[in-house]
Length: 491
Ligand code: ADP
Image 1: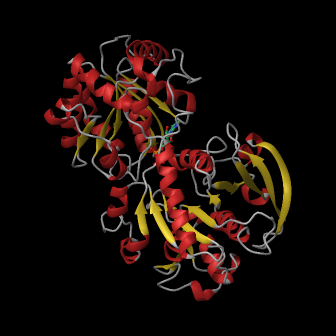
Image 2: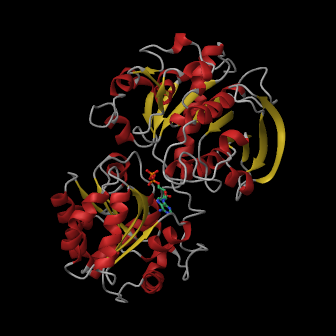
């Protein structure tokens, strides 16, 4: 079983969020399950630098007429043997900013072409006259950036490869003016209501949803939620129509990267099962590093997140004065909306011994916060899966989450019953408003004072197994089912 995994970010080559973590871990887990999974991603400069054993292997020509030849560079994913192809096309990818936006946070104007080429190349590798000998049985595209790939296959009448499309976040849709269609070398006959047209624009996401053989998303709950108007971001109708082909497969955690016993970023490493001393040492180190009061008993709440409305960061700011009354501390690491960044900066300036705001992106600090924290706050308004709750579990940090998407599926609220049966793994609130969130955090803070019950929750957290193995098996089953149905000609 050969699978081409097309993604716009892959850890550790390039990362802005959870998609990179998934793309960096799932292909490796699939390979362990016997699937020949290989990755395709754009050749951003940072990714080209980090890729191991990189060498140019084929030309893609200039399919979208940008005036420069694109090449495929073959390499290995650092830290694993997973084969990677990077699309080397300097005019599109050699930029100073991030993968999607410039340094000032503005989307690149030519994102349609940048990710049109990713989609085109993914599709091209599936064709008989493609540039490589290796041809996939399954093309597995991720998020809108890879959404056009099955549309190209449809346009070219190519049926040899079956297609799977995974939604990691419905809110990002890749919408562009319809005039780009000829530039992307797609025929107008796909521009229709049951095609890639979306309210007079082209939607890369909708192309993925309409033209793929199967659709997956990253938790069971989110798979249901996105079929409703509240979470479907306008695509609920399309998804309801494809409900029979839509499944939720929960993400996993890469315990090779997130393991307090071998974490290179920690000053004090600790085995998950022997967390008490290790967490205390990391907490003291972090308090010193961030200038927080050096109190071992102050509950330390941590946040590692994009700072935006989706993540419910405004709820934290609204409740902060109340939550800090009893001496709790908050350490935030994140970047995003300037209003929220400023809000956390201001809170930290006002109470520097209780609040620390690290605005920006830092892999080492993310690990330190996970190890030092007592609670991880995730009040997301919606959350397709969420990964940081899994990392928190491994580090014996207790998540406080809104009951949505993957958070609802993977966190068990601490109630009288769940504490008695030792199944509680965190604190869950039903409604994303400041009152409900405050009450939930206060429940957590109250239980934190009861050392014995808190340890019971921590013990349950570290015993959770969200390794990729099980999820990779579910993907492998899905691929097998598709191929044996004959969705691809190779089946
Ligand atoms: P999303 O993909 O919606 O951002 P996830 O919870 O699925 O949310 O994944 C977020 C990933 O990004 C996690 O690995 C988290 O540690 C990481 N992350 C988010 N913000 C930062 C930051 N400012 N610095 C370092 N890592 C971050």
